Image 1 (tube, rainbow, N blue to C red):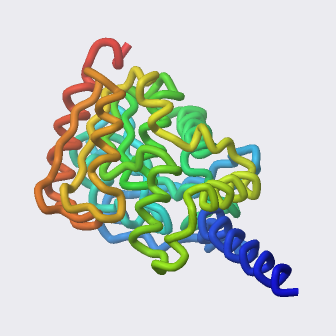
Image 2 (cartoon, rainbow, N blue to C red):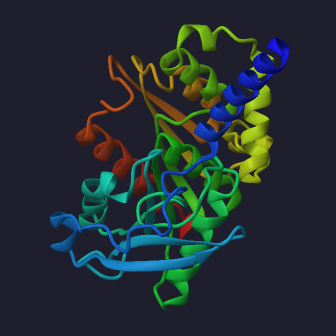
Amino acid sequence: MLLASVLGLEALARWSIALAIALAPNALVSAPAAALSLPPELAARGAQALQTQVGPPAATLASWLIEPRQQPARGSIVLLHGVRQDRRSLSALGAAFSDAGYRSILIDLRGHGASSGRYLTYGSLEPADISAVLDDVADRGLELGPVGAFGFSYGAAVALDLGARDPRVCAVVAAAPFSSLREVLVDYRKKYLPAALNALPDGWFEWALRDAAWLAAFDLESASPLRWVRQSQARQLLIHGTADTQVPLRHSLALSSLAGPRAELRSIAGAEHYDLPRDLLEHEALAWFERWLAEPACTR
């Protein structure tokens, strides 16, 4: 009886971890919000709402499309938010990119904001979703031009994967990306779990991770920018705070090492995960896109 109780508690704990990994913010709602309130800086620039059918698994992605005032657009930049955030968190950057002459596409990743979807897949499925949004924009008669991707945290990992898997993407700016789901789970364990649970063997957490991947039906090995950056033809700028305790700097160090000469790393002294200065991100990202989206190999 005691053994059965212990095994039952162990299974409950493991599935609790798996669910925490796999379930998206919208997993338990019958339908996502029909619309998010449009931030004033985007309303002033005439942002348009866009809905794109993606999958499998089927989902509807909600986006805001901002055309620059000066036409034609110099290119298109997709903006990808962090986990359990939504596109509103990047509205100021989207406005800045638009003012610089780029089309900004702010996307709610599957299961976030006004997008449907039950599960997080940590870059396994999301890049195909973003490619479908780019296809949708092009199908509406808009010339994409050179394409860049900006992402923060979870969105940064997706942006790096996208740069390897969609040849239209010539430049990526990844702010505080994780290197793999396995590696970031180690950091989340230390930061968020009680000491007693965190003391469980690594193999136990590996089983919980595999349970999460099974539940959300994604390939665990592909949930890893480490797998993709070395294959990428995109120019990759990694920006990371040296004091980040949620996704430590070692993630970007590992990524930049594998990516080789196509990547550069900017470390921000003393910055925590959510404290990266917006003005610095804007300046560095715009300089990177202006440098690489204008390259002949990207504009042809």
